[in-house]
Amino acid sequence: MLSEEYFKRCLKVAPGGVHSPVRAFQAVGGTPVFFKEAKGAYLTSVEGDKYLDFCQSFGPLILGHRDDEVQAEVMRMIDTMWTSGTCESYSLELAEWITEHVPFVEKLRFVSSGTEAVMSALRVARAATGRDKIVKFEGCYHGHVDSLLVKAGSGLASGGSAASSAGVAKSTAEQTLVTPLDDIEAYIQVLDKNKNDIAAVILEPLPANFGLLEQKEEFLQAVVAEAKKRDILIIFDEVISGFRTALGGMAQRLCLTPDLVTYGKVIGGGFPVGCYGGKKEYMDLVAPMGPVYQAGTLSANPVGMVAGLTTLKKAKHENIWPKFHERTAKFQKEFNSWSTDQGYDMRLKTYGSLFWFAEHAGTIRTTDQISPKHGERFKHFFKSLLGQKLYLAPNGFEIGFMGNAHTPEIMDEALEKFKKATVAVNESKI
Ligand SMILES: *Cc1c(COP(=O)(O)O)cnc(C)c1O
Image 1 (cartoon, rainbow, N blue to C red):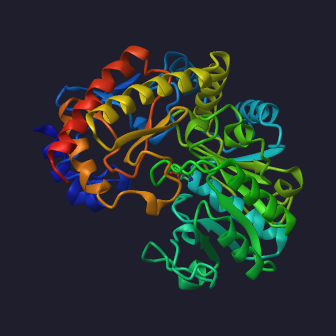
Image 2: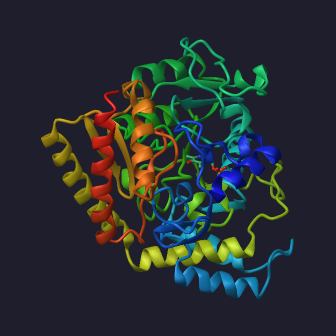
């Protein structure tokens, strides 16, 4: 097995053999499959097997792997310019397209990852308000920036919370206040107790990094309104949901306007691009206009810029969003009625092109509503799917991504595989 040989070598040169922990098979067991090629909805392993891919690099590939139109523009840019460290017009085109289509983004700055976008947006919020504390919600992920690698302590209104990563300074973690999702009372309490210290509230308007925790619209409206009432900035982290749940992301879906927004994933069409933006008065605080320093050698990389722009233009031209919704809704209806008929408790949750399997008939809105057996059961689910040559992210708390390359025929084929995997979970008796 080539994958096993590669993995042995990787273990010697990289921690855990990987360059991002979410790629490891720690949560599911076994050796990671190594892939050598990707096209559309499929990945090809180093052994030469073709896998139907619903990980899709964790979200950037809204048109699937190496879409023909995107590839053509990327190849053109490869023959034109790689990086220059100068002014150029390629980032201008993407910036104009975004500011034109997402009206509350009056100005923006490109960076190279979602983490960088979030880190910079927090800095702007602190500079704009002269306050230090940030409120985040339990179960929301905002990249690996120190101050947001924090989970809820039980005393959520009591100030600093325990960091969920080693190496984060206590004084940094103390700047982050964590409050549960779907609990407006707890949130208001945190705001009231700390109202003169809070710079911003950051949230994933569609939490999608700890399963898919769709929130009530009234909750999200109240989160925004209560912050605005107290002159606290609202940052929507739309690194996953931006351009994927709608052209204008969750802000558009919910008709809510954040002060600042962060994008990543889809915006680079498969290349390392992130972005933060929002109201002009805040973005003008960024250097060289203002006192907030933020820079990047490879920022607004031309290859990423054309990949992103071509992806977004094509998505808009083909109006992919209702199509996504239709495909997953059918998929969900068929799977859930089958699972119910079988007497199984596994249900498919979806939001547009995002999906997640969990043991719960209703909507799961908080992490503590997830079955304690989910992780163990997912191992069997994942193993069965991998055996059927279907690749999901190797962790039961990651969601699945479909895209334009996942045709209705492919979705039908996937449905049968997911049914088989559900049978395997039930046979495991966990
Ligand atoms: C992926 C993600 C990030 C981090 O982006 P990277 O490009 O991995 O640094 C931040 N926030 C959310 C909501 C994400 O899904």
